[in-house]
Amino acid sequence: MGRQQVFDTVHAVEAARDLFWQLGYEAVSLTDLERATGLNRSSIYNAFGSKRGLFDVAVENYLETIIRPRIAPLLDPSNSPSAAADALIRYFTALAETVAGLPADSPRQGCLLVTAAPGIAGQDETVRQVVADYHSELVGAFTAALERAGGPWVDEVQAGEAQAGAAQVDEAQAREVQASGPQVAAARVLQAHAGRAADSTSVARARLLASLSVSAFALAKVDRGESVVLLHTGADFATEWTEPAQLQRF
Image (cartoon, rainbow, N blue to C red; front, top):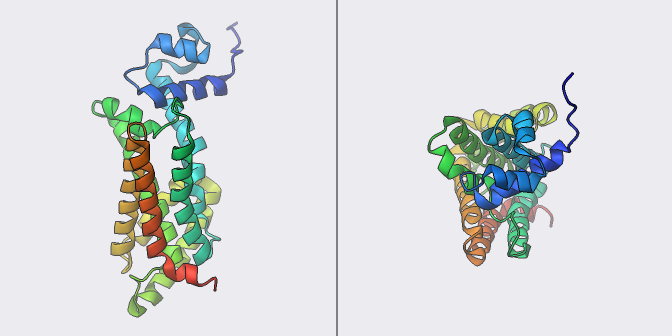
């Protein structure tokens, strides 16, 4: 009869996640993981298969507990235009507050994927796909918020088409958020928007916002002030592009 696993798996994964987040995948040794998780290497191998197996679980934990809760408000199908605008602006201002407020020795500076993935991604298609999917989730969430908030790029001719398409997206998105969570919902947003007249601008702007977000994460470890500036720039763009929705309050 095999020995029963008695350690706290969640604690071990979160401890490993923070270590990878701080140092990157390649810089973390099994000895580091033993020290951080409180497990010996035989327990790590038995539970996760390898250092790489533990890294994969840590990345999924990061996406599920850090990233997706952060983008979920952008994908809320019940958002009014003004609520969608608020969610988009708040995404950037809240991140700016978090980055500015983290202690200098916090392991959670920047983004785990930006910190840990570049080295291993160059040699591993699975990790490359995880990073690409993460970027697509951001773009899909930003696109959903921009489209729901409306914007000055949607002219009168396009407005009817955009409104009809948005209704279809809302219905599909509500089902996806309930059934599969933000990851699938964000992907469905991009698929549903494909080919619509307003999308060339909304998706392009969503990609710019995603690039600002990722760039801010990359800078957070080396220049916190510049990271905060980039995030406030994202908030400024979001404010400008959703101004009509914000005016609906008055």
